[in-house]
Image (cartoon, rainbow, N blue to C red; front, side):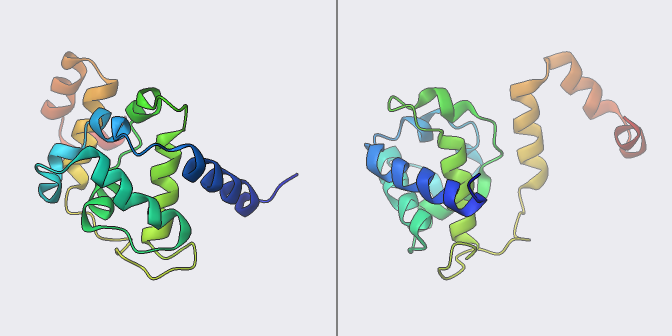
Length: 146
């Protein structure tokens, strides 16, 4: 049985080999509107700027911004014409941006000023409009009880 690091290293090598940097995964992401740094960014350039994070390299500001807003909605997975699990690619890039793959940290793990916006956006991909409305009407105590 492989270690997690061996699996991750294989995944990263395969991703870097097969990724065409087309940006389809970025275009499918429902979170990009919540990162002001990404406004008007080229999808291909954002992906290109994210990939160095996979090998403990320096990502572009836009690549790191995308990592920060990722909520693992998985909408990017089906968008990839190469069959790469783009959600896992972003999770590995997050590890790289946090310095967990051996490179310099490019973001703080506690930095998440858009946390509740992410929850709302993610909920929109999983819940019906009625369920979201119910959640908005509930008090914090009621939300925590469910």
